Length: 517
Image (cartoon, rainbow, N blue to C red):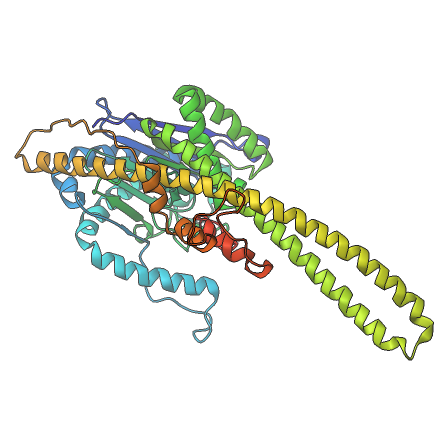
């Protein structure tokens, strides 16, 4: 069960730093063990303000120290594999005390988010107290070693007059301020943690992206938590999974990257395109192209330093990429339908407004004979406009018929591929749990099992989609329809959204996959 796993990392100087002469304050690392059983990816983003005069050093030290401790963690299977195996969970940043609200009777939206995060932490820590007792001391060791390393650097390389002036009366740690995020995959579990901003995303075999580590609401706009905080440990948040649900890919990027893409769907699409390039061109060539692209993206986007690092299962990319393309085509059809629907709604509103104006004009016609000619002109314009609207409505009706047929085909293909992916995942996880459980207990030797390939009959895939069955049932008579009659009856204009939603597994009432408008 050795997967074809690979790691990568890329860091490039931001356009603003090229102009100002500042060093690159980002730092990234990726590492895998000699036997390819453990993989690690790390990204640190040194702060860019004038006070943080040595954040480039701080980010490098944070990444190197974290890698050392994660290697130690992967070697200690007795402690960590035991508390993670067969379990999964996540813990967000912990509150440091009662929240001070500006107006307790009417909290702001940001204050409400922090209150919800505090409540979530209490729920999560109650579920994962055993893991927290082991994980938090490791975070403390990372921070303590980083704090000692920056003090040693400041002693070996005293601050220049300029650096001392920029630092002012702040603590030495401020000069080295940085964020930190890391992901490690071992044979028995994966573990990830994060302090500060930037984005860490993971995807499964269907290339559906999620944030494995909970987000911290304290990271907002240009505000972020950091290793240089006076008490950074409560800001560490983490996630783990020892159930065999390993992501197909994990990619993390500094905030210069997500600030350039602005929205999460665009960032996810960029990561999906990156995976496709890895599948088509291989690791080395892709990493070279990423380096060139990040430099260009910084110049046209955030102008900040850019860093990416990740862990990929190359064996799964070939199947995942067509699934992603299928879903994207479905989303495109949905967007086109929404646009046509919006245009028709506007046309109908304009038509209603014109009818209203005409009615008002006609009501005054009896008393205002001189307006008779104007009313007649408006009547003629209305007739012309109604013809145009009817023509466009007929045209869009034809387009909707073609879109519905294509959409049914996409749903059919999607369900086949989704079921294949699910069965492959279930089989793999069952085998994995058996092997790894036996290895941990010492009661059996691992044995490689070749699972038979399974196929999905078209009839099974179609029968398992309730949306398709429901639409087909509504559109068919009890007798078999003739070849000239459509299998699905097109609803009236007011129901066009309903039949579209019924047909589409990706239809979300105008919202994307994340629930955003």
